[in-house]
Image 1 (cartoon, rainbow, N blue to C red):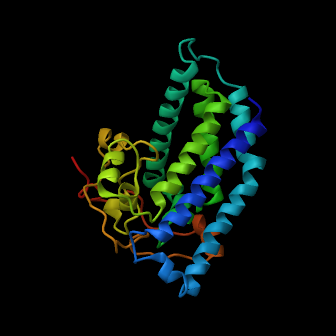
Image 2: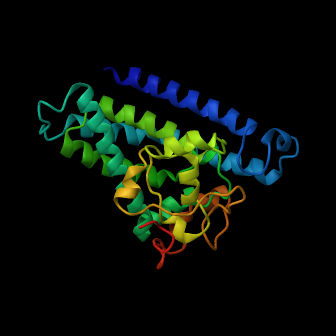
Image 3: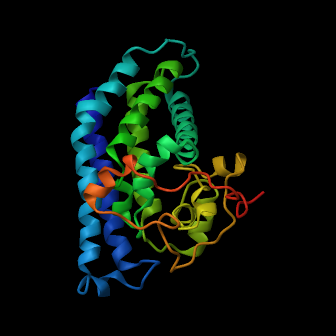
Amino acid sequence: MDVEFLLSIKLMVVGGVLAIFAIYERLNPVAGGPLLLRIGRATRAGWARLVKNLSLFGINALLSPLIVLPITVFAADHSFGLRPGWWSGWLGLGLDLLLLDLWIYWWHRANHVLPFLWRFHSVHHLDETLDTSSALRFHFGEVVLSACVRGVVIVVFDLPLASVLLFEAVVLSSAIFHHSDAKLPARLEATLARVIITPSIHWIHHHALRADTDSNYGTLFSFWDRLFRSASSTVRFSDMPIGVEGLRDRSLPGLITTPLKSCGSPAATGSNKKRSA
């Protein structure tokens, strides 16, 4: 398929999901009461936070066609060609998405374990409020590093560009969903959580308690955390403190230069205490 066509489909899907949950979380939030009532008295800090998140997203949006997309296209065009014939069609697409989600689980986990990677990833975790905009808040250094490592996965497993771009659309949509402040019916969320990452699962990952921050690494499917024993037993509560334990959020320039500073030790000792067996 044409790359521009695939990118336009991705943009429409992600944009639609972002709009839906940005509205829904304001009508029916979990944290802090009805957001419609709070909009009129939104604080300057709240608007400043939104500007920071959207600014970081804007930087990544500018870099994506210049760095991320070329890396992805190059990797797809220079794979080892070891893809077996039976790994094709809808089955192949499903396996591609499963493999990419397994990769992003371990990449995410590595971002919490390796100090160098945590310096970039902590920018995402320093956000002290969670909503749809949090899903857009990543340091451009992390985005570029992720693209490079994913390029290796694409080359080794001979992943088609179409599968990678579809996965990006699905993962971005999933991230918007599970970072949102959307209140879901309890039975529906419990059912979804058996298979995919929901807000009740991912909010624990952003709990300002290091034991929980270093858990629940899944991005799309929830069974990876159960399989690899990284699921937290903590249950989300409405006024759960969000962020990095012992640290406060930073200004936009401070976030951009965060990789040059200390952001706490990743995978702190004892972080397994609150995880399920």
